[in-house]
Length: 200
Image 1 (tube, helix red, strand yellow):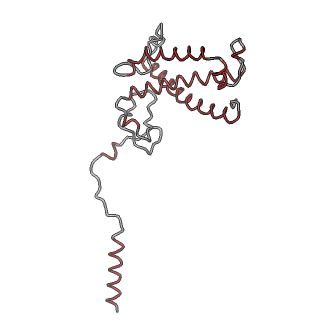
Image 2 (cartoon, rainbow, N blue to C red; image 1 turned 90 degrees about the horizontal axis):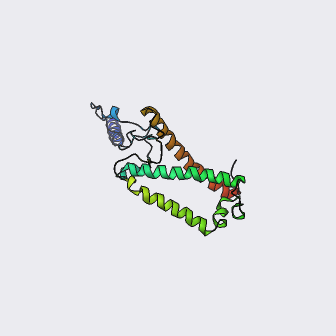
Image 3 (tube, rainbow, N blue to C red; image 1 turned 120 degrees about the vertical axis):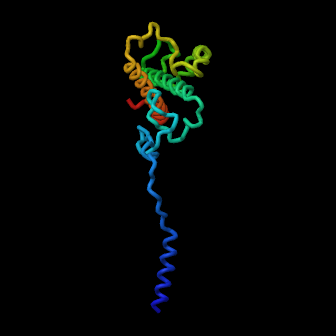
């Protein structure tokens, strides 16, 4: 009977050991210690292309979009462009809804969405042509060499009297404001569509 119990215990132990994790040998390399983590979310590893050389790079890319982008300069151009448009749109939406208007019956509308149809097609065509002209004039700047976002419109150059550290700070501030404006305009649109007014 004792030998039967011993045999059963041995079989049970053998079955249980099959589900135990195997012991891993101690790592002797330093790969674990060389892993860099994201500044934004410390428990995520930093994507390879986000090495901190671009302003505003916090190593945040949970969807891995930087891996499918062959040229991060083009992505930064797109981010800056959308951010600048969002800053202008947020300013325009705030001014429009506050009651500050250009003289003329067509402009006396507080609703930013209704204002697009009230001003008529002539104004909208002018805006469209203006945007198109800027896009065509700056299209070649999106690829290759050059600083993303630099349209050479600063005359005189407002950055020439600043140190490299101060210029880097200005670039960092711009991209942070761009990202904030993109979130803000999304929130403002949702707020207006739900309640017919902005939250301030």
